[in-house]
Length: 111
Image 1 (tube, rainbow, N blue to C red):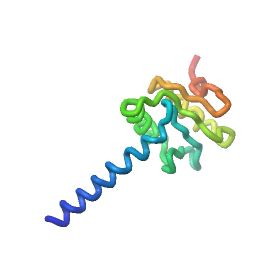
Image 2: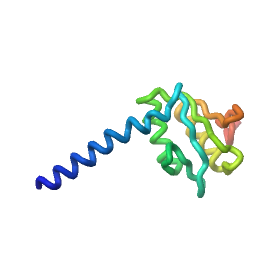
Image 3: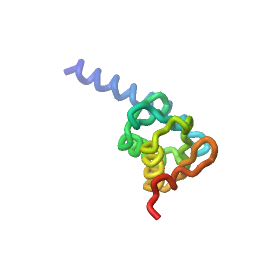
Image 4: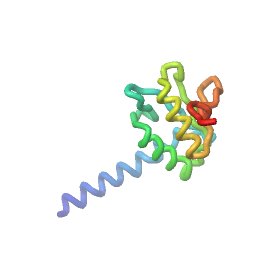
């Protein structure tokens, strides 16, 4: 039982130390996101799908004041990735732009 409790405490401590490191990626309300393989996204060295990205960005919006997603290497992004980022940004009511300043919220938006 002591080993189990010790392992749980170690895991919790590791998570508490890791979360502030992830949060440092939000600077001036902006977070950089890169396209990854298979219509996934890379954030802070972690690769995640649309649903995971949505949850992560939602948490950063409430805890760190995230206001803008900046898509780096947008030329390598697929249409599905561009639409997904635009959809996530519209749902969270935050901005989404590429490095050239193009608004991604317009990607796949219904008129």
